Amino acid sequence: MNANLAAGTPPDIMVLHGRRIPNYASRGLLTPLGDVLAGAGIDADDLTESARGFVEYNGELYGIPLDLHGHLWHINVDHWAAAGLVNDDGSPDIPYGMDEFMSHAETFKEATGMPFLGMWTNGLSRNWMALVYQQEGGTVEGDDGLPDINTEAGLNALNFLIMLRDEGHITDNVDYGAAQEIFLNGENGGHINGTWVVNFYDNQVADPEAPLKNYYVHNFPTVYDQPAAWAGSHAWIIPQGSDPDPATLEATLTFLDYLNDNNIEWARTGHSAVNTSVVNSDVYNEYPHRQEYAEFVPSAVIPPRENWSTAFESVMDEELSAAMIGEKSPEQALADAQTRLEDFALFE
Image (cartoon, rainbow, N blue to C red; front, side, top):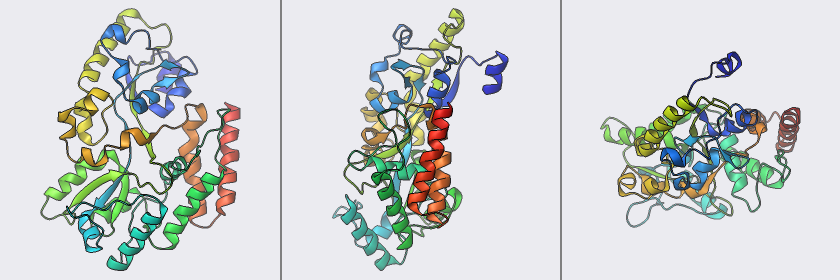
């Protein structure tokens, strides 16, 4: 995309991660759509609040979201049952709050000898951010729009992750592929991964040779004051700038209208649909496990709508990893992340 923008040959339409929209919209590279969507038959008011947030920048709409995706809690119910952590109907007894979560983790480990939770530990920024926003007043963005990383909430979240590792409640030092394999092989009680694997994991259960037999999906664990889960969005954008060719814009909007009308098809993956009318529809809620993680949409946390947000995950993954492996203290890791993201923000 960057090469074509520089060459003056941008595409008529493309998909961009919603967190990157501020970087392009702030430079006048995207076509504002707030005044033209209704005329094309697209009801922007039907977008869920979280999905709409990903295509907004400074009060203007710069796209139509394709999905709302994020991290969920994928659970091996048979292992939970072996530890006595299920309800009378056989569903997992989901813990809420720090005390319940740690009690479940300790009970599970004692009963099964396995970690309660799996996650890939070389990419913790998303889980860390969710834990920050679960705390009262927790945020990664200050009132001035600049990064706000080195905070009490940030330190609480990082120390919690280190404690889970130290006490053997999470898998340690594994990448994405290994973490997923551990869960699918039945070697832990659950796994933090995205909406994008729901149907894939559900298909594993249907395979008689697969170790995973009884699968449940819940929202990201709530261990602090309120539910919060990292979220992202793929969004359709029109990178034609503020003065697009009228005929091209009309044709592109016709295509966008079709895509929006059929948004439920992409939601088959496990991602959340982006239209309230679809999320509340019977058809959508009959998809596998959707009712189990229905609270994901209202708990979804949108990354800051600032240019420095583009660097957030790469910087935070490096610094959080340094703390997890003992190269830095948690305090130093967060201080360094704060400095690096401030430099990025101020440079922009």
